[in-house]
Amino acid sequence: MRTLRKIAKPIAWMLGAIALGVAGLVGINATDEDLSAEARSLLPLRAPPPARETNGFIDYLALTAPAAAPTYETGVKRLAMIHSRGNDKSSDLVIDPRLPRCAYLHFLSCVADQPGLRRQIVDPHVVFLQRYRAMREKPEFVDLFDPRSPEDWLPAYRPLVQGHQLSLMLAALDFHAGRRASAVSELEAEFAFHRKVAVGSRGLLAKMISFATLDGTAFFASELARHMPARDRALWQRLEAITRAPTKAELDVMPSLNHVRAESVDWMRTRRYVRVSPELYDAFKSFGEPRERPWYDPVAPWLYRPNYSVNRFVAQGSAILSVADRPSTEFWSSLAQRRASAAALDPGPIERLILSPAARGHYLLDYDTSDYIARMHGHAGVQALVALQVRLRAAGITQPAKVAEALAGPLGAAHADPFTGKPMAFDAGKMSLSFLCQLKYLSGIARGVAGANPKVELAL
Image (cartoon, rainbow, N blue to C red):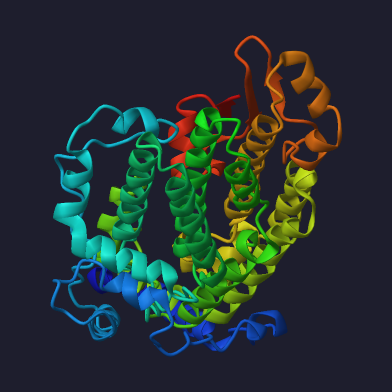
């Protein structure tokens, strides 16, 4: 009898723990919230527009296709393959690896005195360049990626960036050969195209790519401004015209951010994606964010209340994104306030444990996307800095005293530091213009120009 009591006691404790666990699981799954009105406003997900021949995005998908392949049909097939999670080949290497890799702000010096370089650029890439230029001429560029889950891979825009680099190399060769009008025409085509990409971006990937390539195009305009003869007044006027400030549609990241938020809401409403696939863990590692599976991973879907997590994600995200309504000069002070507001909505450890234990580690719950708003301001700063340099050079203002005077006047006010609202910094000793920006808030290309120093600087 005594032996039975000894055995019965731990069994009772075990059964009690199991009963509590079952009760907890039932409670978590049976008492979820209704979706908030704000969360419902993000749904249903807006489907991409249908493919059409006027959309350069279809041409982009066919950039690396063989010469005999029809562009539109090939692009449509590749889009269908991407959406069926097939193996995409549109990011294959395009640029001949023997070609020099020109650094931004140094394209003119990179291609100088290299006999035969034009042939090396054009001959191996003739089909690609034809497709790239035809793509640029299309009246629109609307990305049609429609990921069905957070685990779907989006193809890289590598061919787009490579076409951009080849374009600038050819423009640099034209400039050296005395065909300066041709070089400016190529620059006009690049600006016009990548602005279309910025306007047509539905997701963040295309938007960030457009910021990078537009910064690269602006840096090439800066190179031309330092070498353009003063007598070429018509070309100076064209250079000033194409280095205009970005429009609201080109600059605004909010439509792309809201599209990504809507995707997250749609995916977070189910328990299907609470457990991360091995492929996604590999992706986290490749991005420098190694993560380990939580100990409760096998039962994580049953420890997750979808609507509760979605409502918190949306409310906190909205608190952060409201910083986009403030001017760039108020970004830092406003962001601190918005983050405090978002943090105040975060449940305490006991509430989280009771209401949705698995939500704490849900990889879709990163509601703070303010970095992308900061990148919008950083991109605007790069464009303003180049435009200022071009206008000073076009007006022949290159003496330190004259530059300082111009910066203190309407020209400096119209091309100000985005984060301070003050004139761009001018170093009379180095004869350079600059503004400060944390490196992570610059596009990949602008970051490469800045180097380790969080300053975008241009020689006047």
